[in-house]
Amino acid sequence: MSDPLVTLNTLLEPVFADLAGTGTDAPADPTVRPSERADAQVNGALPLAKRLGANPRELAQRIVESGVLDGVAGELEVAGPGFVNVTFTNEFLASQLAEVATDDRVGVAVATPSKTVVVDYSAPNVAKEMHVGHLRSTVIGDSLVRTFRFLGHTVIRENHIGDWGRPFGMLIEHLLDLGEDVAAHGLGQGDLDGFYKQANAKFTQDTAFQSRARDRVVLLQSEDPETMVLWRRLVEMSAAYFNQVYSKLGVLLTDDDLAGESKYQPLMEGVYARLEESDLVREDDGAMVVDVDGFTNRDGDPLPMIVKSRTGAFMYATSDLACVVDRVERLGADLMLYVIGSPQAQHLQMVYSVCAAAGWLRPPVEAVHVAFGSVLGEDRKMLRSRSGDSVKLVDLLDEAIDRADSAIAEKNADLDPGERRRVANMVGIGAIKYADLSTDRVKDYVFDFDRMLAFEGNTGPYCQYAHARINRVFAKAGVPRDSVRGMGITVVEPQERALALAVLAFPTAIDSMLDQYQPHKLCTYVYDLASAFSSFYEHCPILSSDEPVRSSRLALADLTARVLERALGLLGIDAPEQM
Image (cartoon, rainbow, N blue to C red; front, side):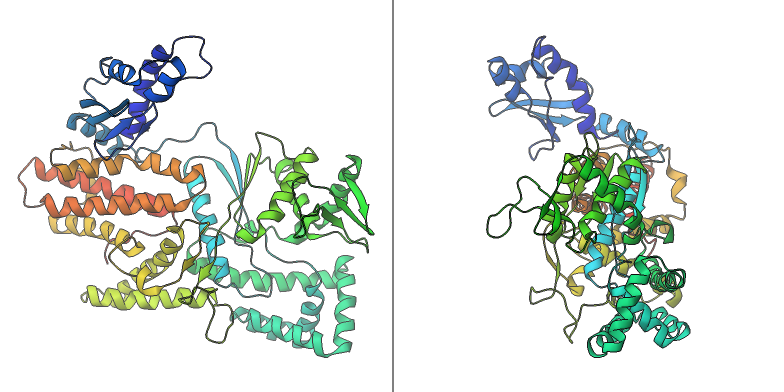
C-alpha cells in the first residue's frame, strides 16, 4: 500500500516494539490517524505509556528522536499529553505518487489471504414488481461485490429470489387462464404487479379458483412434472424482467446468480434431521421448535424458532438454515454477507445462533447481517406513488435519466444529443446510486431528485464532473492522458499536498469501507478527492504553467482521474469523460 499513514505505521512498528520491550501482553500499536493540525498523528504513546507506567510525553519524544522518520517527516511535534504530529516532506509524497502512478491498481494491494465471500442481495419476488425497496439491497450488495472482487477475493453472488410457496398455486392457475403467450407479454412489459393482483383477486372472489390453486400447491410441492414446467416458465418470465432492471441499474447480477427459495427445499429434510440428531428440537403446542438463547417476544417470554409447523410443513426459517449449511459446506464460504433490511435483524440473528449451536457456523467463518434503512418520501414516510402503491424502481431510474439529460443539455448545449443521452444514463443512474450509498446504510433517507442530481455538494454528479473536468483539461492540452504517466510529480503548493494526500488515501478508504461494510465511507472519500481536485484546479494553473510544473500537474491530474474512476467503479458508478 502507498497510503502515507500506512507507511508511517509500518515504519514505527519496530520503534514501538523496542519501547514496549519483551514480556508484554500484546504488541504495541503506533495508532496512526489523520490530523487537522498536521498530515498525520501518532497516538500510540499514550496507551503504551499506561501499560508501562511511563510518561507518555517522554515516550513520544523518544519516538521523535528515533530517526526512523528521517526523509519521511519534515516536521515532528510532540503535542498534548503525548501525541506526535507528523508533517510529511514534499519529496516523500512525490515518491509515493510515483509508485502509485506506475501501478495499474493505483496503490491498492491484492488481499492476502484470499477469502470466499458469499453476498446475498437484491432478492425480488417472482411475479412481483421490483420497487424502490429493492434499490438499497441491490446497490449496496453490488458495491460490496465489486470491492471484494477488486481485492482478489473469490466472490459468489446469490440472488435469493422469492420463487416458492403457497402463492404459486394461484399464480400458476392464473397463468393457465391467461395463456402463456398473453402472460409472457404482460410480464415482459413489466406488469408483474398487475399479474399478481389479478391472481390474488380471483383467489379472493372465486371459490373454484381457490380450490384449483390449493390443488396446484400440492402438485408443486410434490414436483409434478407439468406443474414444474409451468412454475419454471413463471420464474423465467419474471427473471427476464428483473434482468432488464439490473441492466438499466448497471449491477452485476445475472441468471447465473439466482439462488431462490426453491433451491433449498430439497435440503430442509436433511437439515431438520441434523437438528434432531443434535437434540436441539423439541415439541411446542404441536410445532417443532429450537430454543434460542437471548431472544424474547413482546411479552418478554422466550422466543423459540419454529422449524416445522403443526401440519408438518417446514418453515421459512428452516429454509434459511439450509441456506447457511449450503453456503458453508458446499460453497466453502469464509464470509457470508446478508444485505437485507433492518426489520429482519432478529430473524437473521436467530438463524445464525441456531447454526452456531448446531455446529454449522463456527469461527473463523462469519455470517453478517448488512442491515439498511428505508427510502422515504418528502413526508418522511415510506416512498409511495400518488396512488399509494410502492414506486416501481424502473420508473425512478427512467425519471433520473430524463432529468439528468435536461441538466446536461443546460450545462453543455453543444453536446451531441446521442452522446448526451449516453452520458445522462451514467449521471442519472450514478446520482441514484450515490445518493443511496453515501447515506450511512443503517439510516433512512429522503429520496430527492433535485438534491441527488445537483452538480454541487456531496452528490454523484459532482464527483463525476471532477473526472470529466480532468478529461477536458487533457482535451485542451491536445495530449492523451497516458502520455504523462511516468513523468515526475512535484509537490509544492498546499493544494498539491492536499490532493496528493487524498490520492494516496485510497487503499485506506477501501479498508474503512469494508471494516463494517459501509459504502458511505468510500463515497466520503470520493467526494473529498473530487473536492481536493477542485481546489487544486482553482489555485494551481495547469496548462498555463511553465515546464516542468505543467507536466507535473498534468500527471497529478491524470492520477487523480484514475483513482476517481476506480473508486466510482467500486460503487458501481460510471465516470463520464464529458458532461
